[in-house]
Amino acid sequence: QVQLVESGGGLVQAGGSLRLSCAASGSIASIDPMGWYRQAPGKQRELVATITRGGGTRYADSVKGRFIISRDVAKNTVYLQMDSLKPEDTAVYYCHANILPYDSHVRDYWGQGTQVTVSS
Image 1: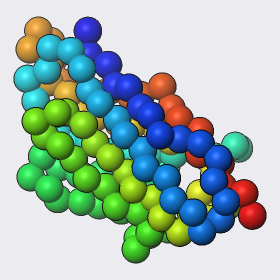
Image 2: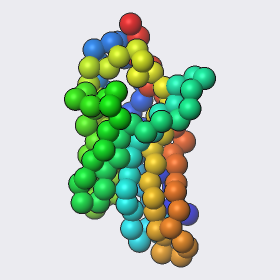
Image 3: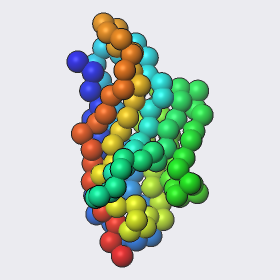
Image 4: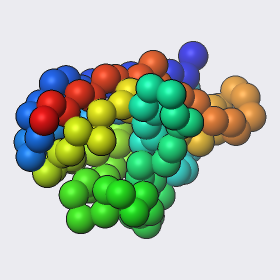
């Protein structure tokens, strides 16, 4: 069974850094793209960053210049390096991947979410 497992969230002071990781496991034929979304209390889930298998990236305007998304294709893993964190970055961060399993059709998969809290 395909699943996404996240790690790396936590509590950090404003200006600090965190690194999130998300590993996809299971019988996977291909993954494209992978990325991160976030949802703050009372707000809709929003795109943070995505990366294609070929390395193409896309960022929300609010994180450009502060966050970097990267990917290890061989390990089916995506990372999000978050620097210069601000209190408004506080949210639950969700890993997302569009996955084609060997035994099923392509669809979206989500991680369980990891809390990121930035104190002022």
